[in-house]
Length: 325
Image (cartoon, rainbow, N blue to C red):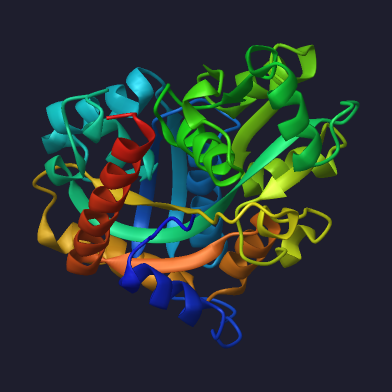
């Protein structure tokens, strides 16, 4: 099973691998930027916002960057805050990703990407399943055997709500492996840090998470990566096997990008989009991207909207098939 991101995103992702060498520095575009992060520290949103801020400031595209974590409601609290305080948030970018599509479809919160100013899609991150470093499970075959023996005792955790992206990825993988996705016992946690604690304590057998987060945990010696949703092994961590090479025909890439408050002035929107576009040409960004194993997927404005509408349909169709809608 291949999860369709849409033709535009796939073309952008392919083009990303042909980028020429990054420039050393850029002229400043933004005096400052404040990143609103809808989840806790240690998650994919947190890493994306802080990595983007690092690249913008180190390259000279932004004078300074600040960060604010606002957990709650599966990301809905931060979205509501952006909408309710729109007039005073012209210097704020909120990071988000595929869950903004999933959670609006499932009614976790009443808003959707259409209620915000679409700034830019920025990167893609593969998904991964990991187990604790001392787990008896070493491969997807081992995890599937444990699931067959006792599905209820083979809980998979994630940093998103039930029916959210981490849950969806786990279900997609199990479905592609010939299992009943509805039998997956999924336990949600608010952000990756708490989910990781549950894995280490044995509360869950495996963790569904972003590949970049999985790499950081693996390099720290805390987990083993047993499967990645990429077509081929990712150069950032080539020890991690793909789902495909283990006979599980599924791939998935989670986009991450940035949104402004509704009614964001055109000049501010243009400045944000200009800064992000130029960021790709810098060595600072390439260092962040390579370190995290991200794929460059850049689409601004109308292209970003068309991409999200395409993904909304693809996700909706998949969730109906799996019984989540």
